[in-house]
Length: 604
Image 1 (cartoon, rainbow, N blue to C red):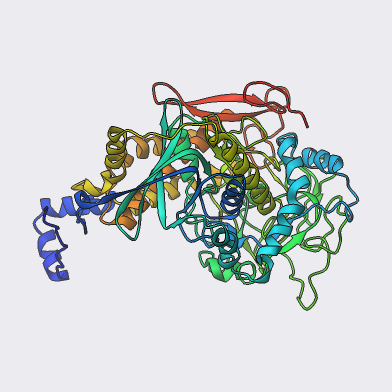
Image 2 (cartoon, rainbow, N blue to C red):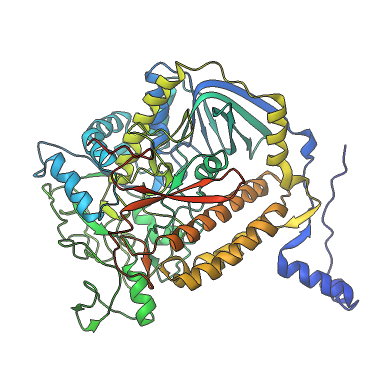
């Protein structure tokens, strides 16, 4: 057994004495500045055991999409395993979501056809109307099931999520980080990862896999997405799946007072129970605040349409809005097309609750509930608009370009609402609806497939890749590399207010991280091993965001280019898909709006 090394504690006097040695001081200083250090591992990676599972449908992710995927796949007759990086209903963005859209035909003034048309108008053509229609058609049924499970009775969701899972005896594996999807003979065969707590490697053989892994960011401070790092998207990309939507930006802000204190800013969301919302078509949460800050230096400036005067100041240029969608900043401003004023947002608060002032609509479209005063951007840096990024669907059943691999919720680039916020509460509803659809589709697919086989050689290869950071004698700290990546990507003039010169400058740094630092990430324990894999995923996601942003030579919705500030309907009525070429390089293609990847037009 290899001897485990331990750190030696030295005094300040000893350190100064060592520094006086000259050459030694230079090496110590260089290591500290570069993040490079000897890897003092706290465990013996050669003794990690394997745990193996076999199932029809493997659901990865324990949020809203994962819950419905597991339940509906089980109810369709499939054997199901649900694996989660965290705790069921308590990790990712689901605990933060406190508004869920339901389309009630008895209350709404807009028909579903009109709803789809207005969402498309706000999204400037970027939405997939097939998935827009789905959320309206199925949202009421999903909300009713959630109500039956007790979802609306508490601000905490674990118990409500556990109820249907326990009732069906669906195996639940929590606190396991999935790092690899496994493809054999051109189709999905399972997944692999490791437990943070038990020091085990987990192999899941599955006839089909549903990714409900959410989106991700660059671990920004002040917004509850720090455990989401695009894991599912990058795992799927690595085995050949097409992904989309990386140029879009989520525009959530935070309080300028203690901006890194997530609970301080957002406890008004965390502490309240979820409520339903009715139809309210908007055009919100793009990059207008970021543009104002860029042009004015962050002063109190109002901005209407580009070049228009609004209030006491004039801001020329900036993101364009479609006709009929003005900037809605107040929570109680009636949203476009709302036929249900009693539901939030757009109507009064529930009885006994005070209406908050300023900041924007709850959860989507502005600052946290009760947040007054100045706001800062970048709180969700690295994330796109909900449902606008993720795996490319090839049909209305949430199926990806890899046979047997499905995705739902923010892991699926369904463009349900397009590349801008168009309907408050639709994100949570869309995750529930898509999870159910993907679960049923994956169960049907699994009945036609033979028992999955993963060769021993493949398992050994994947295990070596998983444990590589633990086995390095020295390397770069994932925390240091992540901080470096944040410094490159999060600045307003890189991520939000874009121009080619700055995008290419940032890309040069990210490619350096990819080529030199990413292969040398180290880990001392299972927790740091998780951080190492998350850092890898963020670096690849950053490369995607920069290259897609360079490629889209126009401004539209939440993507804004200073050097191309207008819509370009002649060249850019298209989404950007990203995939890995045969030589391993990152490849890009256009997919025309209104079509599936094979060119077939939508039938709405």
